[in-house]
Image (cartoon, rainbow, N blue to C red; front, side):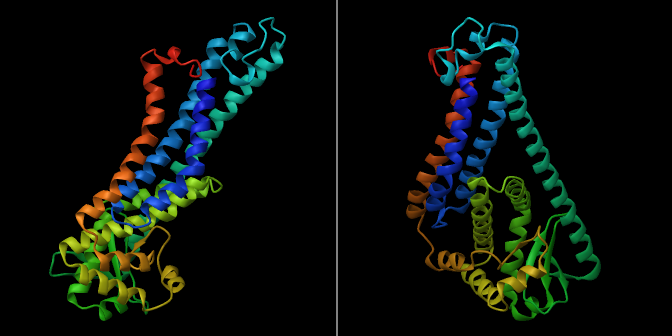
Length: 330
């Protein structure tokens, strides 16, 4: 039982302290891919801790169900001094079972809801991709990238997942961008599709919707979205130029208000100029050196490794029978 309590305490610590630490470490956007990995590692650690706590509690109750009550409580911090005379009786035993079932039910129900939200987002993206292909006209770029052009007065470009994924550009955006800028925009959106960023966004959105009061999930959804845009900016700049990405971003973002552009895009879309425009412009202009990126990436890597190592260490201790060496882990 103490193992379950330790895992829950660890997950609570990550949920509370993780967002401010990760927000500070990823604020510069020098290594966006590593930043996304760090956020996802924290999320996975919390979800894994919840699942492991549910399993540990269920196994503990199952193993001690027919034993005297002292065996059920002697490894629990809050009842370590419980007597072995069976004075707790069946009521306490029933309470332990209800606690285990409640934790297992919480994890299972929330897990089903998250998976359902991801599936629904995928279906919505596929429907929008099919609709755009039907109402739009195909645009082939000289670089080989392809997109669907739809008539709209707003300057916008976005991609939606499907089979295959679709890059959508409005007619106003095509008219406003020159060839290098348009090629950079298409490369940006193609980077989203190639990196399967839509799966990450669908997952973080589902977690935020299902568990809106968990600080880590809400912060991760917002910050990961910004970092994914920066990742796509870097891929597009590598294929074309930073100046082309920068000028295209400014052209698209300055055309209309952010609210008007967002009203055009479906919820599942990843758009070129809808998130963290000022931060992205700033990083495209300053272009950090490799040494600076490495210096900022090391703390991120260390944080991700630490967050992942704590629950992994507990699992290895239990798996190899060494948990008995630590009186607070059983």
